[in-house]
Length: 99
Figure 1 (cartoon, one colour):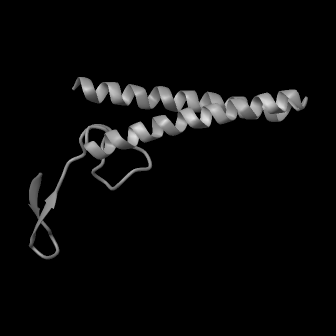
Figure 2 (cartoon, one colour; figure 1 turned 135 degrees about the vertical axis):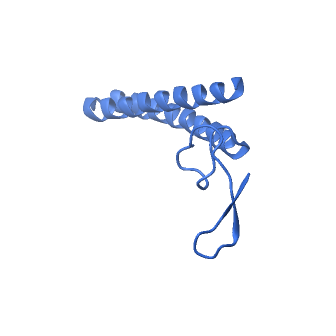
Figure 3 (cartoon, one colour; figure 1 turned 90 degrees about the vertical axis):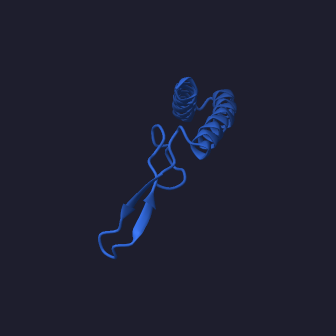
């Protein structure tokens, strides 16, 4: 944590640096993938992506059984996006643990 001076009031202010890469959609300007909060957010995002993938696969199966090909393809693409998010969060967690 660094202490710097506020230019408007002259009072000292505390600033913290982001540890690691910034985590999307989570807590404040200093939450990075290396912080405890950032690690928790990455684990949460990874878990949500698994649940979303399973739900999308279920919906794809329902649409295929109903002979609706276009919605099945759309949900299959969303399921692939969930796999991508899972891979990204797993890589971020792996990178921060190795440093």
